[in-house]
Image (cartoon, helix red, strand yellow):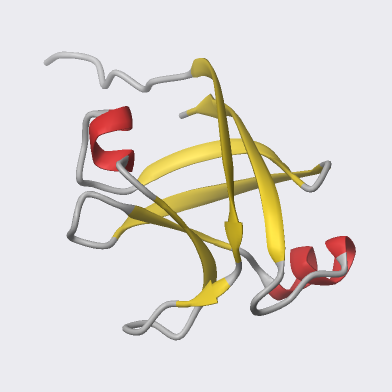
Length: 96
């Protein structure tokens, strides 16, 4: 029986954009364009990094068009004083 391989890769990706509302789930998120190509998968991707300088962990969720959404929880939005429509800067530092 083989071992499960878990990626734990340092990366350096900057994503900037507005917080929007996902049409399907209603979650507030930032859409990362061309992420399926960048990460080599159309599946969920676990990451860590910072948003407007505040550390966070998230699971990027595929949108089915080659892009992923980065969900932004209410507690994190409160910390960074941002909400729907506001621009944020996301620095992805690690992929799990």
